[in-house]
Length: 334
Image 1 (cartoon, helix red, strand yellow):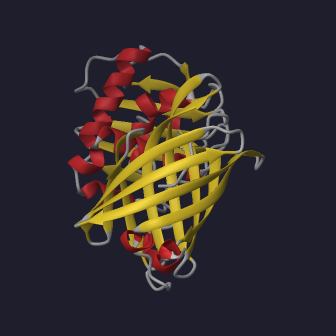
Image 2 (cartoon, rainbow, N blue to C red):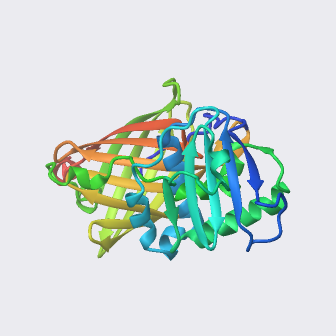
């Protein structure tokens, strides 16, 4: 909401993240009923935050969180397990008898089918083992059980399903701000005329664009409609219309013409956390970027907004805005 489109930051090209192997006790793959181990050997440093964000994006895209309400509980329970990934580190995921277990160590591959193997760092049966088994089966068919190279994009379509179970949201929860005042009610704040000044920065902090946005908001029942009009420093103009619905328990859903799917948000105290995806022009191509949008109410008239634009869990640009709200008296003044 209020976040600008950034055409210029490029998410970057493909790069090797890990090598993977599928192993079986007899050295061949005989079908999904067979015991099997997927061994992932990492080739670069990946911090936990990037993996967590990529995991949440992929779960959202696959609809797993909506289909299985207990998924969030699994994520929270397994929150403390996963460390940062270093080159040479290995993850072993073994599927046996409908149960999946994980080992993470410098040489996890040695533990895959060892009878006296150490205790796993995590295991899961219901509700998510079927998703993992399906992913491992798909990998075995596409990779032909041979060591292969994968880009970050292919991590999400093949290998990342294994990491989903042992990654949890270590990012800040909006409920941490529930005691902060003044309380932010976005329906109240954005009703009427609001203005903001902002800038887009790339991941190095370099300023790419500056802009002004004027917003007219209208509340009817449980729906807030926002008409946004952007003017950039290079003369480009943009418009966006948000329709935001209050769903209860301080939660919201929203749609807009250039937004993929449905945005979701939650308010607590002086904060509002808003997540959505948008197709963005970058380096002559269109990229689906994920927006992690935070708003903080400073007083009755002023609000700070910072948005991280992410691709595969990696922040490629940030948008910072400062909002001011026009009062009814100012709108009617001659």
